[in-house]
Image (tube, rainbow, N blue to C red):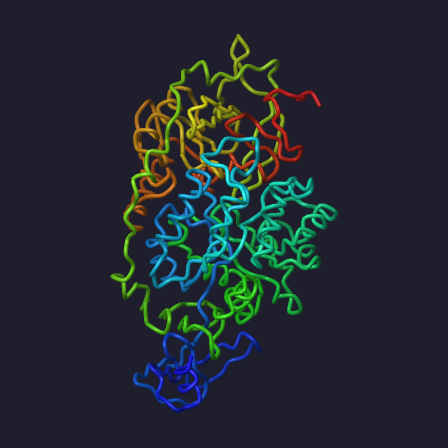
Length: 577
């Protein structure tokens, strides 16, 4: 600090001075044309400076680097060090991550793995502790975390608080376990992150009374406005499945934009590479009418302030020198990325790739996919009539529709998958404790003409989830997932068309991001072979059908789950209504 003060006052030369740049002032919403002095990885001053090294910005805009305010590392399916490489290329130098995916599989060991594997990287990984493991008591996860399990992590400097409180009914009913987590986090003077999916006025009032101040689940303009009006930070999400930005960005105005933050939540590797991360949110927001500097402010300063990261989010004295050189403001074309004052990405390539070590995986991370043998008979769905409760996929949304439709049955009254009606059988197989649980349902929207798709990624408990046109291929898919220690598979006529192995807790690969990307390409191509609907991401959509905290109808290893009533229901229950 002493040296930075001396550099700032002109008493010592800066390590580096950036000249001829147009500095984006996210405080006033203006452009500054001055020198930028950097010392020890921090910005020392703006004005006229001399330095040991001079960088000519050549008229480019100098922006604060971007921060993702809510993301699940595991959804990229790559290790944190590999994800850092991808995100740096897109101008993101910090994220606030919720490791509840890996925690649902292996508990506190998963949280510790995330902390250990993100040490000493040229990237800022911050974490919120999983609040709902399991997400609800209506499913079987690999672990169960109470406040006693989480408390030791609260003192870690990169742990910012309690992650998205998904179990809203637990808050409404002042559940002792949930209250202990929330109050313990407040006592430690840390943040409590929200997940207020579907909550209306009174429910939202009660939810916020617990001191929850953020929400990334607004999907309509009305919900977005209400969350801002209630004093929440609105986390504007654009991920792979949940593409809410265009629906809610109209709620952002000149008067309230400082309460708005960009997040991705869950984004697949291929979408990160094709579209980008928070930089994509910024570009889309600009095309939707948000002023470029305001959009950049939402991607940087607002996020930093929301989570108490006082040293991030701005190009100003005392802030980390995490900077982007942009060719122009409208396209947000990133020419260079600086982390801690050092050039780390130049024209789309990570320049210092050697400083991104791959964390050696511990043996306990593998071997998490175990289940009892099962037969075709255990996949049969007996119906009392042709009518059934069906999960209807909503493309590019985490929401589903609860529909009642006439199905095809055999002479004995057992459900038969029907390609013409787009009715597939859906199964969730418990894979943590050998319970033998198999939850069954019917899903509409995948449009498979043959075969089955399956994954050991099934938010949030990550049991096996399989959708198929026939029982034989569904069984083959389950056995293949066990053989490869978790992953994603496409099966047709008893044969594996393509697969991606995810041996780290059954949800992440130990390969490089480009190797995983290549295999994802093969998986996508195989979807055409079985005739799947490719207007959305079927694999990620499938994985969210097991999340029983987002309306309307989902499925767990314990059966079909009505989220609006927060209870399990029979497949043919109340279908006459």
